[in-house]
Every structure is written in structure tokens, then in C-alpha cells.
Figure 1 (cartoon, rainbow, N blue to C red):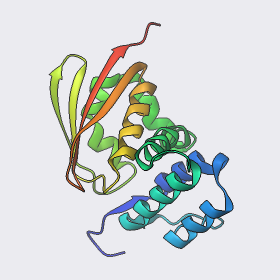
Figure 2 (figure 1 turned 90 degrees about the vertical axis):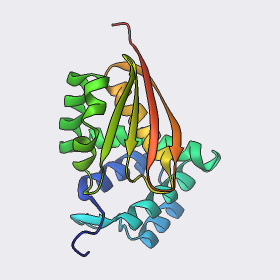
Figure 3 (figure 1 turned 30 degrees about the vertical axis):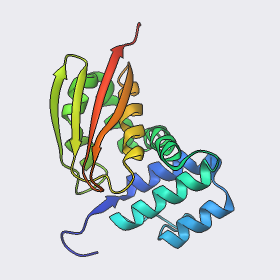
Length: 184
């Protein structure tokens, strides 16, 4: 991997594997290996962005084969949060999100995503007290994965969220994040 290359870090792949392991078939395992992720070996410190994208689509298609692609990717994103929660860093990040609440958590999107990769930049626009627009510079061709991930992360902050895709150009994506406070 060269300097300046977009990569995801080991804990990101660990979170993905933990997320899909209960549903992982031999076909899924074979596709992950073909994509560049040896699921039976120690994880590497970092993986190229292209490997990450191949792993996401293989995971979605193999673990939720009866769902349309976007819905399967959304489900992998949701499951990723649960898998990530089982990692050391994931516990820390999600613990902070719970304390911060949804608004402040979204405002920290760049910092939160940068704990798992070296390329995410985000901008937030407040639309109302419970509605924010989140722009991310790079989600690849699969914005539904990040949609599911953000929605599950917001749920972890203690609210009932809804995240919708407003615009996607193949790389950058704008999400509209709304929520209602959960009765405690």
C-alpha cells in the first residue's frame, strides 16, 4: 500500500467479520478470500479501499441473499455496529456516542469514521433540532452500507433514527438524519 492510499484499518475488518460471522457461509468465506481478506489468518493492519468495497458487496450478497442489494448492504451496515461494538475500539467509540447523543455524535462523524479508516471527511448542516444533513466525501458505490451503519449508530445513542440518502455521486454521499427521542 502506497502513501496516500485510502485504507480501512484492522478494527474495521474485525467489525465486519464479527457482524457477518453468524451468517457466513463457505461461499461468503471464499468470496472474502478472493477479495483479499483471509478470514482464517491474522488480520492485516490495513486494507486497501478496493478490498473493503469488495468485502462489503460479498458480505451483503452472501449473508442476505434474498434481499435486494441496497437492503442487504443496509443490513450489513446495521450488523457492523454490533460487530464493531465487540472490538476494543468499537466499545470506546460507541460508548462516547451514547454519552454525546445524536447531534454531537453526527458532528463528530469525521473523527468517528477516522478511527476505522484514513480517508473519511464529513460536513454537517443542521436543518432542525432533530434533523441534520451529513455529507461524507467517500462511501464508494454502496451508500446503503453507511446508511445502515449511521442509523444503527444513532440508535446506539438512545434515539429512534431514520437515515435517508439524499444524494450520491458514486463517491460522496449526503444523508438526511432525523430522530425522535426514545422514551426512557
